[in-house]
Image (cartoon, rainbow, N blue to C red; front, side, top):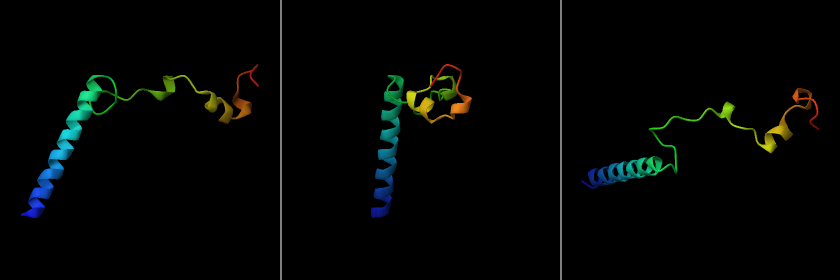
Length: 63
């Protein structure tokens, strides 16, 4: 009987966490299930990315 109660409690906690994350997603705070992931290749590169890339592949005029 204790195992059944524990499994029910775990299922309830997971359901509540899913609902909470869906609420936060609807407000724009997190990406959970309903929105698609952004295409990261379209995002601007960070300064760290430009420091780590190969110098031979940099556009002319950049150090």
